[in-house]
Image (cartoon, helix red, strand yellow):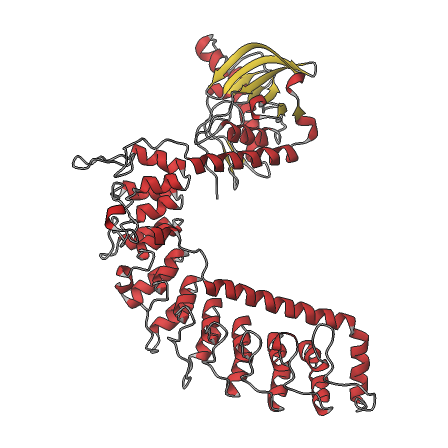
Length: 596
């Protein structure tokens, strides 16, 4: 348990690769900067070289620019084969290093200038020279995906197993980037490439292509006659299957299991996780979890060495849809995890509910309470800490409350900044008269604002729950402020200064709702009036559906329409905003879903 909770999201290799990527970006930037500054000098130099007067002019080919490059470096980066040849004939040192310990061959490889690379190699450039991060030109060509350059370097007997700073070979880099052509080239007939070569964290190339979801590379390596070891583990105990599951690469997961068998399914890493646990840690691909459960070697209640299950992992990371799926399919929420590093007398056993509570996933805590399965022979249940005093786990959790408060403050600040100034109201501008409605959100008043009769929806003081009033208020205002149509209730403004003063002001419609007309007043409506109502409703809905960001009402009923000169759509009970879930503008507070 202690190990699992301390599992890093990135490895040392990840951090190193990030720095390598940044360093090459800086190198390219510095080269481009030098070329901009010296463009005129560069043209003059080219003319001088054509006239074979370089040395007579007193120019030194070894001289470095302020960014650390020679004329040969710049010519190689620019891809000027004629100038490169002239510089070499003029005495330029082909092995001279510049910024980042780069030679001209490194730079020509970065820029993928095949002709220049060939010229440099023909003139004796060392094909296996290493830069500051121990990358050879072949490393660089594999890293940037320059397949033809790779082929040329290998023709000049580049070392395919040369090791970079962290033990990474060219095959590691090509596999991580998904360059299938380069992988095939490195693994071609007669190649000495070690397909099972390990870097400093014991990753083999299959680890990298599995992690980043390069299905074709995975298939090529597994189907080939390369004597590959598909179940090898890195220093964290992860197989390639683990990494595919941790990163949600479902197609790769299927490929590995189909081509290499189920051996990896039972392997557990140092964080007490099998591939199934890893998929639950990722938690965003239910189909991948279902597929793993369909394998005979996987049980939904499989426990790691520390006792934690896939349900624990899903709870810890806040994957509520996966939690519900696991519970619906027989996951036992009463199984406990404990820290294996503690002595037997100090074991701190924890249920999945406690893991969710610890991370502030209060919606999951609430869900687990609904799935309570007490054990008659056990003195504890999912509400209490085993070995503790059996106290009830209350919501919100401390972390959950902090998360909620932080998010709500951010939402309010964003709303204040985005809401047009003409919609900003002060509570002192409002005059409250009689109450005309109420609900769990608070009360609705008839009142006055800026000399107009309006409806004022006043929110009660904020309470922390799964859908807080602040959250609902922000969602409602963000929708209403964008609507402007005669058949949709008109937004007047909102009070945003403080949660205790939140209020939404809209057009007041004196006729009441269509529901009241039909079911309370029992009015009989003639056919012509029915047609008018239907047309007005259709116009309102057409407007909502044809917005740039369409709004789908999802709960049309007679309570949603108020009687005015036209029938106005006002009660957005169940609303769906396409692509972004923003909320519902007026009365009720049910669930919201987004089209994605």
